[in-house]
Length: 177
Ligand SMILES: [Mg+2]
Image 1 (cartoon, rainbow, N blue to C red):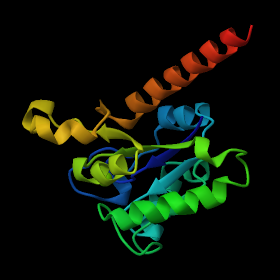
Image 2 (spheres, protein in one colour; image 1 turned 90 degrees about the vertical axis):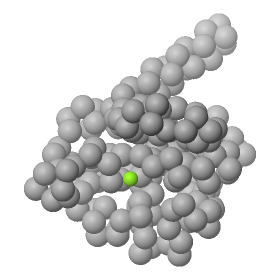
Image 3 (cartoon, helix red, strand yellow; image 1 turned 90 degrees about the horizontal axis):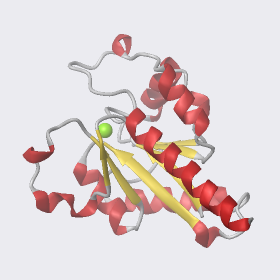
Image 4 (cartoon, rainbow, N blue to C red; image 1 turned 60 degrees about the vertical axis):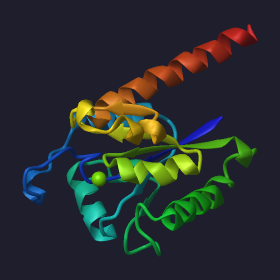
């Protein structure tokens, strides 16, 4: 199974800011290490512009960690329009088929801080990860049908998947012996 990691940018990657300003964005060393530790290919899927995404990622020193940026001005639709997810999925499959033997084994994990952005992802059978420190009891429980994981920030989420990856790799390794 080949997991592809897809990230929203604003709030999901750099966290919540009271009032947006590029000067407030900080380089997060833990995030750099987490992204490096996870060998899977990573993509950005944002409703912001391409230029904004590049600027933020460069400030955070993580621009080179992502294979491609899908932004509001580089694709036809924006989230949560299902058309944008289908575009992203098809485009990634096109890119990845050069490296992966069996493309049917490709799976997508999507991290976003808005619940409504995760619903179309779930419809396409992507794994859905909500990044939110908003109190869970403020949500309607019905809303959570499309959410598989919730983490308060991206580092906690990546740390979980890093451990899960290792665990699965160990199981696979042990079962070969
Ligand atoms: Mg966001």
